[in-house]
Length: 225
Image 1 (cartoon, rainbow, N blue to C red):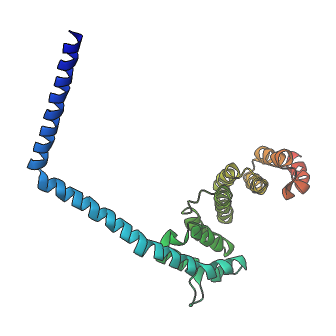
Image 2: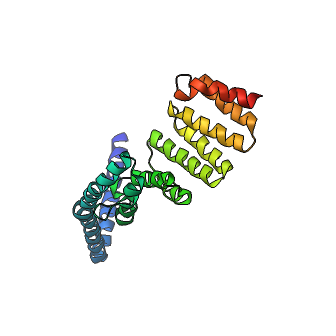
Image 3: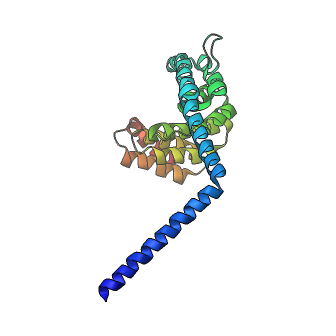
């Protein structure tokens, strides 16, 4: 009896499978042109993406990086106007961004923002810095700190404090001490001496080996009076 039940179940499964296959074949035959058209379209799109990436996008990235090299060298030498605007022969970061976007790397926005900051163009600096989306913690922190510097230049100390706080959160290393010092200074400008004191004491306790810690006592003494 058990053997018969097993045989019946096998027969039922076989019948179900045949019905499924038959239904699939019927569907394919009825929609053959549509299915083949979809498959062909997917292949064409896929090949198009591969071709664009290999023959257009990647060469553009290489070209963009080559174009950015003179600007990076000018930046390293402190020639910020030259790095930003170029010299007529070599492109500056502003032109590289216009022509290539981030194909030369996301850091072009950080470079351009720092150049504008050094040139005293604070609104323009913020425009570039806010477009920087790099994930590397130290550079991301520096971008936020530079935003803070730009806000200080504009006299917006509340926004500067928020930017410096964000920089500290992204840089749990020796650079954080510098950002805390700037945050404290901005807080003092707002008259929030208790919060400024907390920043200075954090430098003293959390970053005792930093350069900022060597003379942090004078800042603590000043705001603690």
